[in-house]
Image 1: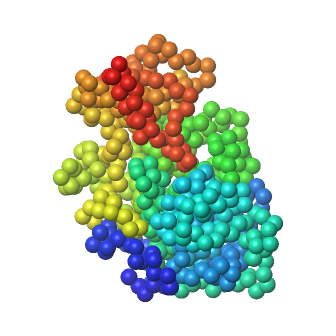
Image 2 (image 1 turned 180 degrees about the horizontal axis):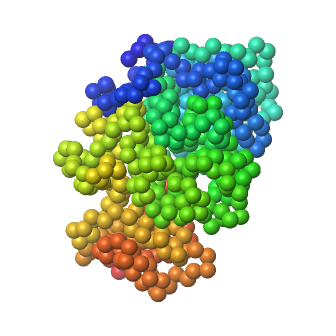
Image 3 (image 1 turned 180 degrees about the vertical axis):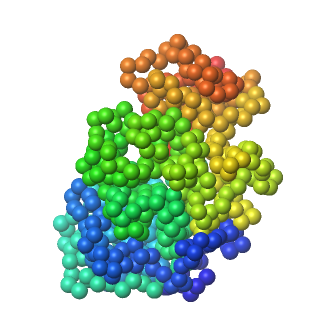
Length: 548
């Protein structure tokens, strides 16, 4: 590792031991970065240096910033951090805000000043905020004024947090008041190493206590120079938007890093449900949206009422993309959705094919710069056609913040993601399930998402989630939780119709032996289906039935 630019050594001191790191690969020439690097100079400063500071950068309902205006705002916040708030390189700063230009500026300002960003989802409550505050020993938080209540409650639970600075307030100590000081318009980027930590992104905690994933300055560029460059293949004239929060690395890449890497513009929406996304596409002439499969499916029925002619490419991640949704979107728009799988540990998408290589029903091939394989139960690389554990390596990889779970995620140099996949003879990777979403029923292995995909092709089904339900005779049975489309009646006749539909679409033994109609499905703040909640519900119901 190069000599650190950090004064506060916390981040380096809490990296995993080097022998537990994955193997990193930098096979592409564009992934070779200088030893000294502050990534903000590449994302923000270089456009003004190149005489392109007047290009439109950030667009929001309340304001629009050019690259030069963003650069000055970043500089002013960086000066506040170092001159007024005492930040030294290596300090961690928690950010709490919806997607807006101030959030982006604060993000880059922390990094430019040599700090480490810990961004959080806007909907988190005090207890959830207290965890990263304590784990990362954070003394300073920057917060949107609309979200201060839970932030103040979290402060009471977090002994390390000393100060909360708010923007969007008229208070004399607001961030805007501090930024307005004369002489704050210029700031020299901290002399950081390319392998200094600049981001600790916490996982959503869907499988247990959240994990802090540590990413370097070079990682921020690597996801742009691999996935964005070789798969999305955007142009400076493109206009990005999407639904994921910037605290979610899918959102950070798709809504900020990817467009700013090439001098494009991005539209930041504080609220970005399917209706808001469709309105934004028409209003701002969006060309590339990033969102989840459920959002694309929800937008399908409303496309006829909106002008989406500006769309050029569409990116999907966060959940597997059902073939039915891919086909319907392609039929309606002529656009082949770019599916992909990524993880917070890897920072962004590492499997996904460019539009001319997309194959419906497959996630795709490894992104340029990455390699992937399927591991069998003994940890050996499996032959094509074998169902097993997905493993990947490339220019980014897992480095947990002081966490024993590093040993599970990284095995023999590979990042083992916890997903079950199959690689076909052509090298395409086909998603089967999260490793804990495989249902073993009477000796058969059944992937819940495959049953979901079959159910979603039925006209009555709006959404569904499929899990294993404990059963005395079969060990587990396949149970489907189904949200119906308006006007549909969830009765015994429809249960039989759905079961027959699945039997006709996939192997009959995979059909859901139990179907329950529900008003909504449990989801994370980023729109992912929480199958563990459905498993819990199914187990509770089965226990009650067995007891009675």
